[in-house]
Image 1 (cartoon, one colour):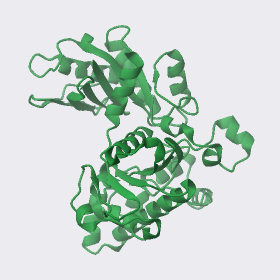
Image 2 (image 1 turned 120 degrees about the vertical axis):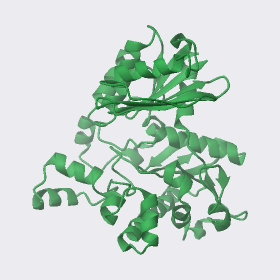
Image 3 (image 1 turned 180 degrees about the horizontal axis):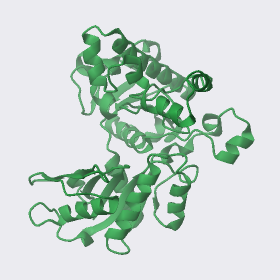
Image 4 (image 1 turned 90 degrees about the vertical axis):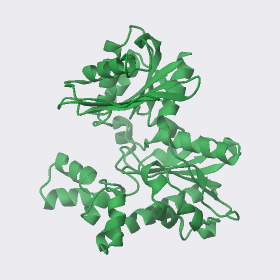
Length: 398
């Protein structure tokens, strides 16, 4: 069975075609600059890469170009688009309505649309991708929505409720939703397999660290808490996002800087975080280089990131009554060795001991980076959200 996985952004459409029976990725790529000029990067397995700069006025054209590339006589990996059994879509926000993946129908599309205010940058693009596939693929080709928020729907009310007037929370569906759920789900399951333990028996803290970062506490096989909130702005300071701040800062800045709601939203989401602190970059590699050259603000940004991560790890260990495994994943978590070490430094009282010699050599591959006598296993697990989407799609349509 061949499953196409699509992750649509406002001006892009990343894709992978899986042979789900073998687990092989037959082709992958990215249609980007949609609505601007267009660039399709297409990477088939065992064939030469292909780049097209044909115009892409909209997502429908982009999806058509992706399908054309997949069946191209020279670069293609299938003979006809009818070989695609189904399409799995990454969808940011399912609100309170979905705790698992679902086959797309009109009701599902309505929920995705109703969640536009909760995911204004992503949900509209996700729905556009679904509708583009409906227009271009053979009629009746099943499509599946896999929600970033679904994994976190097992959180208890005490973890997801904000201390606002209850009626307002009910009226506007204000609560902690959490994000990166597909990644947290994958790496928490994978670390149990990697350690040879039963998933339901472990207390796991998953650390998805990248330009956007979030943590999750997993106990009894269910998410108990997560660091992002109503939106992806909450939690640890990130590339350009503030993370958790005193809410009173918002009206204070709006009043004193005479900012509109849209302007303060832009400041908090796109001009803050480690970029705002350092004045250097939102890329942690750039920060590490600048810090090594004596840039104090870059070092401060790195120190804040590790300190805040350490506090979250400690609080989740307290909430779960201990921790058995800590998992680092995503671009920063898989590759920034110093930040992994610094995020665990000082947590020896919890039984966490990092093997520095091993940790310093691990980049983007599975490995235990704690010492043999560490009571808590600290593990690097590269995330693979696409295979989760493909597997969920297969299970729903087979």
